[in-house]
Length: 523
Image (cartoon, rainbow, N blue to C red; front, side, top):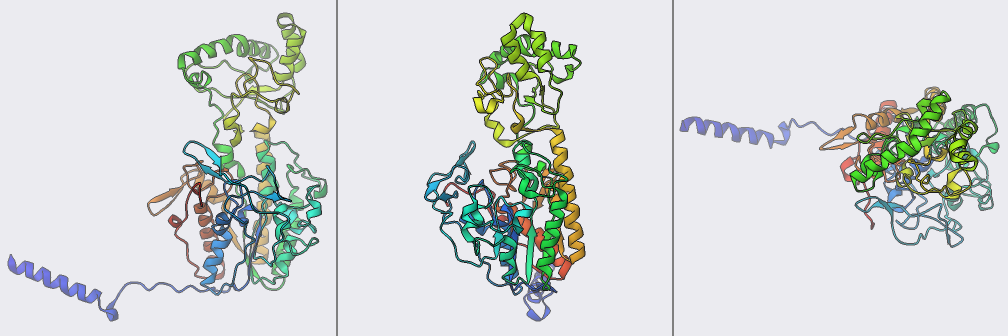
């Protein structure tokens, strides 16, 4: 036995000596970082808020540092990449000043206070009218649509009041007459990234479809801020940008667009959050009593009249035990307001019956196909203001509870027809992006597939997992639209994969665990 122990010890020592012998080390050597056929000397990033590093409903310095474009530039540095300049915000508060005045439309970043997202305290110090001297490699402009990148004067302060300019670009545009594309081209880039098009449908979606699908309209100057860009306009703009960027031999990477309706902004608030307990606030028995009263006084009579009008599927009685859908206005439905008013007049009187007709003429209960937008989580059960009610007045009690006794309005919900318009436009944009990538020989990133994976199985790395779940998933920030720092790091890695595959480079991934999934209150 002792002999066997000595023999095992001798073998062990011999094995250790062999492993410590540099000449006999069999550990695989790390592949050196090389650019392949790409040249990263002068990298410019064109795009919107994603390229800028926007996160948690604001643009702030730490978010910009952890944006995918900056992370990519750091990976490029190991393969001959040069300096990557960014038009940094002044602070980590976020928000903008316009002539010294805080603009509530550009507020501070959000942080999670333990129960809900909440704005950080402090006054923004990033002044729109304080011009930064460039040039800047990061040309991501929050809010920019595809056609904005080629619009002259998009950085002209004089255009802010009429919506012809963007305050973020005003800060760093090389001149008042330049465009984002022009500011990229004057730098003679050797490599570029182009990730644009999300905003061409996003504002329509976040507004609950309060806008117009401009398919067939070739003039963006006539578009409203919440309209969907005509796919032909997108194709012309996108192709012209790719042609200009590659004219001098530059290589690049382009990314298609995810279905934005899969973002947490549209998937977090359930269509059926109403239970006996939630309707009764804290006491389940009170909630059941409330449901009985609602069925007797509102849902039952509405169901009866609508059934007589051949539209009984719009409203069902509330359940005392199951989760119930919210009440919404569906502007795609035939308006039965006049018929409802006539039916209720004998029992309610003409004035009250007319109110019922105005409120419930296009009302129905939501289904799983309806997407309730994220801000509505704090709206359900509240009293509508005159401006938000859609009828020009504050509704009287008890018909004054959003989603319960008063329908959520158009801006609160994406109905299926609106989601279909978004998908159709996105598919058309993505067809253009894929075709341009093939025509110009560019690396291609499929972000649509990545978001689909985040929303279904999630993406595992090490001992962690990323999903698109709001707050807890790790991939998205607290605005429900833009990535977290960790989400941006994931984007940079999939960009690296596409670049390596196309150009034979050997760029490395970043460690996702190094990047936070949420920023703390203080930075």
